[in-house]
Picture 1 (cartoon, rainbow, N blue to C red):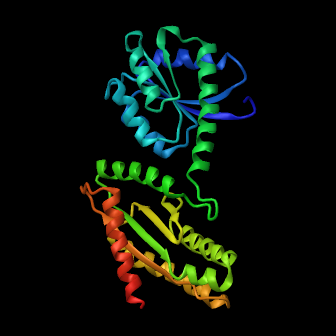
Picture 2 (cartoon, helix red, strand yellow):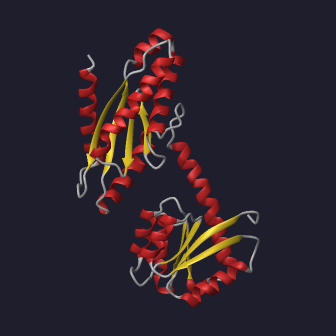
Picture 3 (cartoon, rainbow, N blue to C red):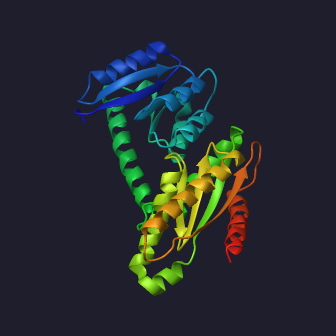
Length: 292
């Protein structure tokens, strides 16, 4: 691991302890780390949103938050960054609770030395990388490379909870590739698969990388657009239709047709993902019927 320099965030209100721990790690093994030290959770969350970190060391007792909720609040904000929890002797049970909730490891302050801290960081980095690889494989659609149904529901439910907590709006979109059976029957399944891949590409190119784009199965797709509102709906539909028209202008085999339905999660709304999808689905079938 010595060929890579990792970016680490240490969230600890005792500056002397933080400096000592950082010095301990720097003197052991071949791991290379650039450290940033923050004393409050709210500041750590803001910094983690602005900068990219490979790992976080987190003291559970901070000036603005205490105990297990310290981990929960940070993990919800940065679910893809591994966290090693640091506890006092009397809070060791909280460390184990944090591990069960998603922390990579926990260390007790009085037991920490350079070797144990360095080993914990190395193992956390490796475990997290392996876990993310396995999760990614389990949540991707083989044909299109989009998220599959499992991936969409898992990521979207987390995103909706966060949006509700922060009073943010977002859009849910249902998309259907019209006439897939006819394409398969007329031109073969390989051409039908190509139509699905083209649809997936159009959706990926329309939305931001931070948005969640998925193939739910068959000819059905879904999108969760983050930081989007009802004002964006017409623009989104227009961009998708423009891409469909461009494909049809260059394709001689068949005409691609996509039906869409979009609904909004409004600020301070606590509607569920299933209800949002059902509402978007109603809009989709209205669009599909209008073409008949």
